[in-house]
Length: 345
Image 1 (cartoon, rainbow, N blue to C red):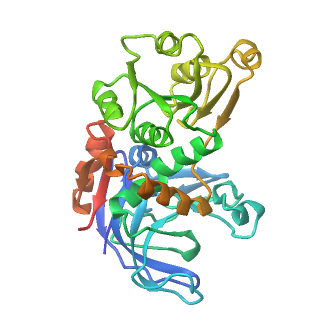
Image 2 (tube, one colour; image 1 turned 90 degrees about the vertical axis):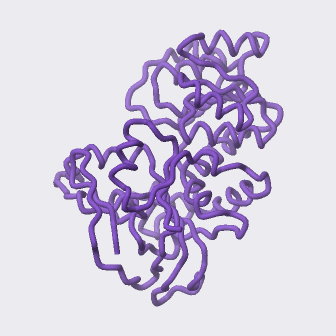
Image 3 (cartoon, rainbow, N blue to C red; image 1 turned 30 degrees about the vertical axis):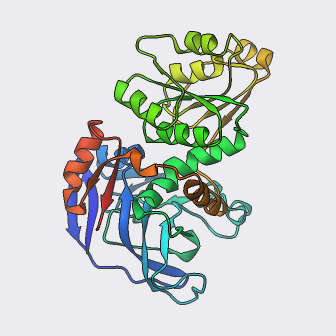
């Protein structure tokens, strides 16, 4: 079978490798769709090495792809919950299976957490072998492409908005309109909220309007907080979600909500300076981080997509064959695509 690897320094290789055989409790999935994510770039840029604990580990041979969907073609011993022919998406977090976090469905909090596509082989290959417990059934009405995108972008933003209790009573501001932010616009609109979308790229703002944003703000040309205050008659938004990971946008997200506002950070950022007294305490806001979703929630996420007829495939601007991987990652790295997906049919 063919598989993508990143030996380092933006080099992409497509190797002929042996098709895996499922072990006890595992299934073999024939890939149908696998989405590219911005976090894949950490391996794409790297030199194939990663430090785990105090050891240098070669990850140049790991197949990337943590947003896959496909069809089960073989089941290992001990698997009774899935059968050959089942259509599934794959949960990216691998855990010990025994700790409190794994049993609660939040596998990514396990102390033994590993991520497919980073620590173990991912979906940028013709076949993927994973524990059956990481498989999530895809509704018949959902395409494989929608399913692949639903595992991270849609799932993460659905879970964040569920925790924020977003409803039709809310004015929701989304900062950063890449695939995550665009998915957030789509979900908030489906929940009935009034959505304000903020970015610096006009094409993204136009897409946000197509996905349900009532107002769009180009923060290169306008002060987003001033504009949001004007839109809300100086009351401020009730909810803000930052998907950019940009420090200024994160501060704007805190500043644009009114008293008792709720704010979530989804975009990754290692450092931020805030003024807790003025920005948080005296407005009594709730500020939280949100990362992925518990595996048990996927049935709810997928049914939400189907029941609200969410146009998830609109998030995908480019589709590639696996043999086009070098071009796919180059264009994605240059931000000439939004969501890009490998497809097999």
